[in-house]
Length: 259
Image (cartoon, rainbow, N blue to C red; front, top):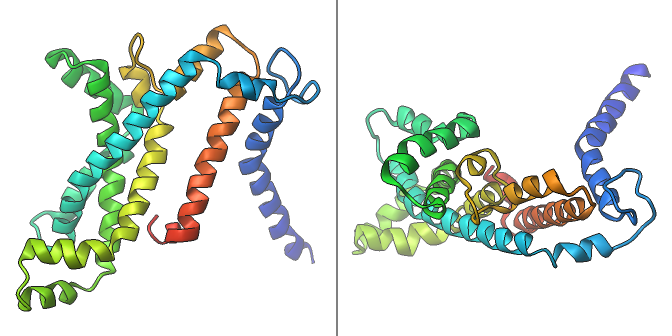
């Protein structure tokens, strides 16, 4: 009897640990007080409304969106051919190449940010925006390669070969046969990369500069001078956005099959 009750209790503790911070942030964002507090001091939506009136939030949100969309698209442009080569050809040191491609995920983000700053930004005097774009692309690229590779591994190679035998060129077979059949994996890779890039903090912390900041970095700077619940409100909105994107991806793409 005790053993039967132990597993549900542990599951309950895990859910509290995972969902508890989200509940606290949402409750704090609805506070009617002047400072960030939990339990909330009354209930009000004025801090949610204030989020949309702060210029720095709007500009940094636009920057984060540009980096997330642009960096993820560029990562897919590089990652889809790389995944195809790793999946379809017996390359020498193929597993080693896969490990190297995964390096930005394995290595802590602080090290990646410092390396890009020291060996890319400083020597070549790249602008902050360009540096952030390259950094976010590098961070998203492993997800693009891994997720698309999983889709290609589940697609029979003889389908492509049949298209070639019927007269299609190799590029034509890829665009007409392979790519349509792995579009779910490509979309899943885009969504995973977008969410990862948009919420990135350690790398962006090293590469952000005056007037050019991503939204998470701007939120950190805002909290250094202001301690009202608007940051909690923005955090809650971003959390709902991320959960909504992942929910829709799971609903229409079967997101869990690829990650």
